[in-house]
Length: 563
Image (spheres, rainbow, N blue to C red):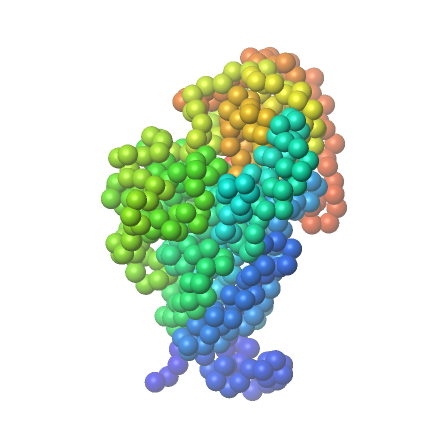
């Protein structure tokens, strides 16, 4: 039987490709390798963070699975920027930018070598959406394999995650924790490999990938060090080989329905607000307009059904023990909150959920009719301060109203200093601006600030508003992604200390009682924060956070979004 043409024929077939084959033979490839689909094994392995440090080991069973499936693995590496390590410093500006760089580097490696498919090993936050963005952009057969969560640390009989370390910093600043106690928590919080342990951004986005259909259901569930992880890696290798032989591409899974399913998983799990950036960005790469208002619509009708940190009690390893993402999805399916869609496993999502096994007595996942919280964990707010929208995370906290006195800070460091010095008090509305995609540049997360507030017992008693982002580990009355951002002339740039800020979560508004016209007339824009290199390139290209902060085809994308 005549073999169907392959993308990789461009480098392996015909007399003119003898030089390319010669190079490949030098790297160990054979005639059989050339005859099979050639699959990129793109790894975000690095020794800089526990989130990704084990991914080189997991690549071995993936390669075995690809070969067993009659395909040829071709290894590449790309970068990771650790959110947890860079948090609170200048390096955090690189985090969101890295999403675009990872996406671009995957595209360049795969297209440059005319490869037939890709499997992408992911861990820390931005590697996950970047993997989906690359597959959506190239529309090739592909699978995303999540390296899994870290196990909890232990200190004085208490389970710990990185969230506890950040909040311990706030307790230490308040005087409620000694140097020795802080040191003990620091040394015990992260026991080894795996991504941050709560329903923070990594675990939120890993779950979203399963609901999107790009990650095999259950493959991401076992913790990084679990005995089942290598077998799941091999399964993913076999699956990507199968997809390559079939020619089933990523955009056959990324649809408006699957995007809504993924967003439903985010709001129903009390997941990270970063998903409000990442899912529209994935949609944009697939040529689908997916408004941030989808999250608000879903939150109005979808309850929070998991009791996961940061708003709840449990960690990702507890969700795995309870029955995993399948059990969570089964609850949403039985509550008629999602629709059936195909997945890379070859089974539909509902078929996957039907195989869920619930651990006896588990308390992590609730039925839709007996939820942890009656409405979803995210709301999109508009109003005077955010004409293009902003994101409020409500999981675990009041979703009513908040009125307070503005405390304005030009950047994260100034706000963190004020909180650490206990200058921020109950009832304040902390405004942190010039931290948006352009203004940062890079849209830093404010976990250091929110954790310090929480550590002082002020979570929910102080509101925080920023044109930057909040970490998936943040909790409290926090509003991020304010658009337009200050650097783009957004109204947040006009707020002054002492202004009365009114937040009405029920009616989805943030307003201020000021003379906007007079403020605008008197406003002197702040000089651009130029950092050179990739940072300035990003600032010049990036779209609004309300459109996913993407850097591809911005004019056309914004035109499509307006339709």
